[in-house]
Image (cartoon, rainbow, N blue to C red):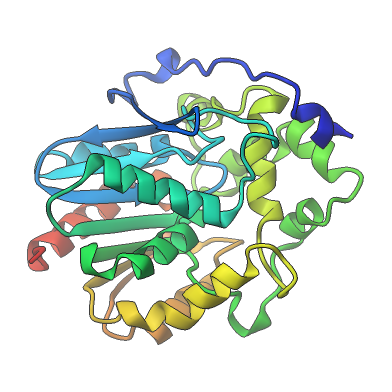
Length: 311
């Protein structure tokens, strides 16, 4: 019932002024069928496209945007329903993987970078980004992988029980996520290894300030494909099967060791598929790697960029 109700409700505006010092970037918007798709576009030079996951937004990449934009053009969108993008009801947007990929395609056509792109992905951004990369192989110059997947669960690994409960549409799942903000509010405590400041926690959760603004956090989980009958399974299967086509592209894997979703089985699977990739396992970091080790990860990425210039 709550899902149907959400097609009628309107969300509250997102107030980022309390943490503007942490996120001092100019906002840009792309029109997507009457919906506003927000993105950051900072700096000049080699383009770096950063794709976030659930329940984060471009705020999660703030350290990389600041640190890399002196020599790169950093582009970081908020997926529809996330961050400062519009929060459409279900009758305006289907919140499926294909729509996410189509949004990125439209964005990159709009910003139209004239050099090969470096792709930085995290969480759901990995599947979105890898699918987009396979459709745009000639545009990919480098790839940075952080705590994500671009393939089906390795070894038929089950997803964590917390995600299974939400995905299964049990009677408590929808009200817990939409009504009580369980997914976003819990993530700021469970996803990082270290305790985040109150200001950072507020920044990460700010876009999800009312039930109508939390649809994406629910639908991302429900769109996780596990069996062929799931709507996004075919796309993930094709991406999984075609991932080897990226093996010639310089790749850096930065991984938070203490991740209860994308655990070391996923890290090992990336290394198995891309044995030539550079891999760094961060011992004191969790799923929110860029919150736990922002300086170390930035330094690692900057060094990788220096040693692997885009051709």
